[in-house]
Image (tube, rainbow, N blue to C red; front, side, top):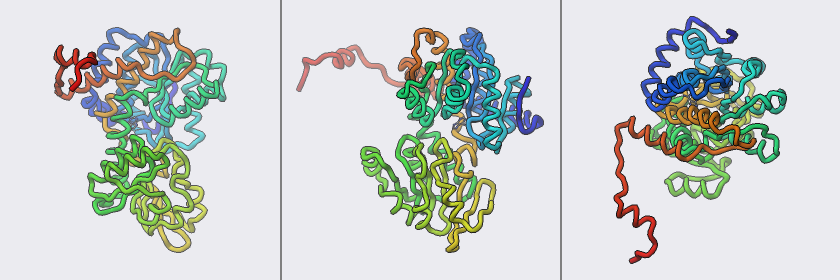
Length: 418
Ligand code: ADE
């Protein structure tokens, strides 16, 4: 078996942490148990380009128990947990190509190693597999049954491919399932981003001004949790509806250039480039902390910051200090990459439980339905989404009410008014 990991001796530590995460993933565990009996993925070879974390390991075990041959690589150069990669290879027999801190060349070498295995399905987090296949290995499109995409940025790229008539096989947008983005993007990103900032810096959040760039579900989660820690939160937006929502949720809303003058901690979560750029660095306070929670490391204009800096040094793990010519220091966390995965452990397992239940059931649904699908981006079937919500509630011991027959009738009638 071919693989590329940092250190096989970390495998035992990885196994313990994977088992710990599994305790918080009851919905995925139930799917795994059923998959082991029914093997709905038999005959498929799945290339998974995901953050190699304990939660992902439990997803990969589920796909493998479902009968698929699984090969994994990292979806971000900084997010790999090396002990998990080691355990996947040593204990699970899953070929894994992922090393924390790998450079761009290794990142794409690993991704291509997965594609050299000639998968029949792709599972992406950010669309790098799909984009590489379509641009560099187009002959392999014909070998693909289907794929799935985990994150907002990936779905945006896929929709652009679809609009260009470039997409050559069907993909399910797992991100767009309600049981994914309403929870993972909001509560997962909210908690893990604050976790990353705190682990990296150990700064007190209470009393600080935290500026959140973007008020999608990730931004909402970050703003909510920063407020919970006692920060004064400012939101910046380009979308009037989202800006209005932020204002009515009680946050101050203003352009980034104004926020840049008063913020202590800045977090970007927009999916677009240069949210924090040269003109902002020029007016920031000494000691401003910059973090990114968007998928790619493009949200902080690091090339401009490097040009402005007279010195750059690592002052703590995951914290680089850029000293500017006027003496101000700007601190960048996790090299501007996803701070929650670069400086902490990513979203907690309890929320990834739903995201990865979606991934597993998307794979099953695609195998069952792929022959009738076109080369388009598909939503998760709403019945599967609802079933995951039901199972999650059940696992949390939460019961809910049922409509009485009278209530059902009332909802379908139009004759009764005041
Ligand atoms: N994305 C965000 N958090 C994650 C995690 N813990 N595992 C895999 N992907 C993630």
